[in-house]
Length: 456
Image (cartoon, rainbow, N blue to C red):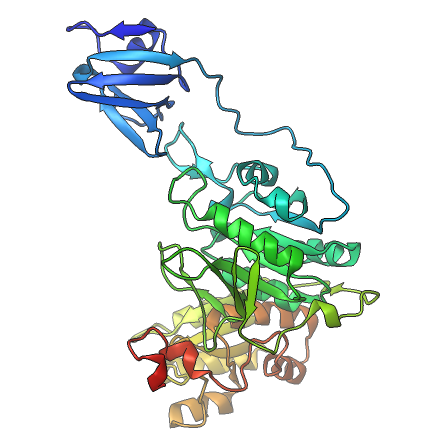
């Protein structure tokens, strides 16, 4: 069907669509001068400027074309409207394959473009991801469950506890592994929290996300899902990890311990790094290479043992970033609001301005646990080196050799478990899930910082 476009035709998008019997999702060929475009007509979002057609090209990218500049439209195929919510996808079960459960929480890995608002929304069901990545069928029998449908910035400690309970049930159910789809913005908080909340894991628990949504040609959702699912299905691992792309080559994923990983770039696809150490290993295709030996191995866990989940978590914990000239009102606010814990992301070796000491002392005297983490990320707290640090320690500030996100998640967990101040202090200073390093591996900081590995 060919529609020649006469000059002077009313060019508003709505009347144009109706006048030419063109509907969203139709496959068309559009001629504009000497250029010819092939693609699918997309619904227009409600805030879009009138007078344009939006087209998804065959290469996956979207373009907008001004209607008054078009010469001809050829309708090649009438497609039914895109169905964005599946009723359910039944996958054949093969007894020879491992069983993996994918828990959906939302985030970019489970997102699509909303053509009503023009934004990205967390709307894909986990089984839609399965349908979009057929390679998963070659790896395992995949079951899916939605736990949340939120972006990761909306996560909170109560969500962590609910997620940990789901992981605990699955670890005790006999599945071979668990994959958790999660938004990347706060995924490091969640990996740390689940690491503390769940004890005696028997299977790999692999958090995974994507930096770019599933409907984009540059999306890393598919390769990250493949790597995470392969690791959960076959990895000799029984702890919480994050698996995301490891380099700009986008061919392999790094396996990061859940208590040492941090998002270090806002947009690149290989955004995650292990802090203070090197990753546990890497995965490329179905090949897993381990870099570290201090790994809790699935093969060494008694399958008859029970995975246990903490019963409570404390939500009234604050993370305060120390900065020059900061007001003591910040700390006083949390005291007055009845908070139970404060993590300070201190400067240098673990410092705060002297004028804040009175408020910090007040917090501790009111039985609020105060933990010192480092905004430098790399390195250890050294509160015995300078007088500032020694005074803070004398006040009762607890040194925490952890990245701030992990210290925050750990304090939420500790305060849910314990109430006595000395027990809290001891728990913070005890290595529970690999969050406290015995020493800093120089390769973690120096490699790719301009120093050749041979010179380390």
